[in-house]
Length: 477
Image (cartoon, rainbow, N blue to C red; front, top):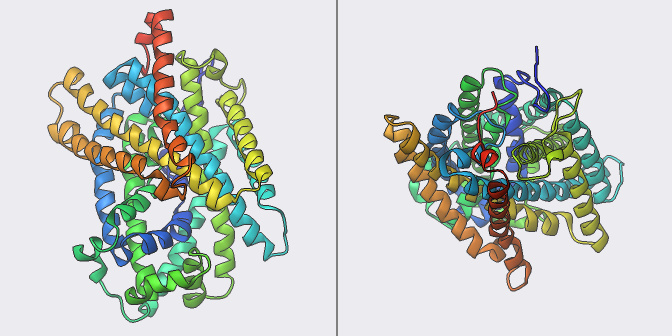
């Protein structure tokens, strides 16, 4: 039975599987396989991608050690914001809150463009012809309806969508495995030498992008059943599911084409995403490539819905705790959903969609590539701050906690995240094709600008209501 008081999120509405799949949906497994991985092979280190995924999975597990340790002391839908508040104080928390809103909105806006671009191609082959922005508009409206209503409705939709994503990819994986690939199931792709070939930095960035969203397990802490157990388990489970899935799948994609032919084959496609559909047609055939195309659209829709939920909950927490206007901190009387944040996010999405469609910019090369990297940059910044927050929290308030999970691993993962943040910030134009233009400077600058705005909002709250400021990030269970 779900219970909640006035202006509270819907309690006890999400179990372990629901939380895990809502988190994995943001990582969009099929989108990663069909969209990101061909680019990772081509621009990164080619056959070294499976080994790179092993490394990145270990980094995510190192981050998770501190994240999970602190999650047992934090039950607040603000996630990164709440960690910063409890570890570093209200001012840092204010900065993180606004960075989160900017970063997750950027991911959401970019994915809206990517969905429109892919859907227009997939459905036109089935005789359903709409401009890309028409498909994007349909997705925005459907996501808005789900986000406005109860969270368990979104969870049910996302569990089905993500399960189908895994199923279609695994069908292709096991077909390649069963037929022995192009010329044998070589394991030399796991050789460290392969990992250090090509551009390791680009490879790490693409692999890291496949995990974006796993950190949101704590966003659902106030709505989860038995959060002290559910949230840690969902965090580790989501990291392992994403990591193992991509190690296994990228290895089989390589052996399916042949390591020696991998990069030349991808370069020969007009669209790199054709790699997965080529493998599906070659090793499975029949309707599988068409079904995979439809599920790729549903994969993007699942990711849109997940990020919409993140944004709505960050908005709700910021309103509840005094950073944003009080209206944001109210929940729907019937659905107990953060409906104001949901509505505002939908309006923002419609405005951005109208601008890109009206100016005639490309939904993938411009809308997705430009904006989504802002989200990646913001998430890396928040993960760096969170790692530091874990260390400070346990040093000051939880003496005697195991040093490995509360100091050593958070410090290691924090340093890696900080290095990646600096690299993306300095090379943003190279990564997005905006080198030499103002956008290459303006877009990454949105993240530090958001931090400054958030810091200012927290200072205003501190002066206006010191007692409320002192309660920032407190538990809500």
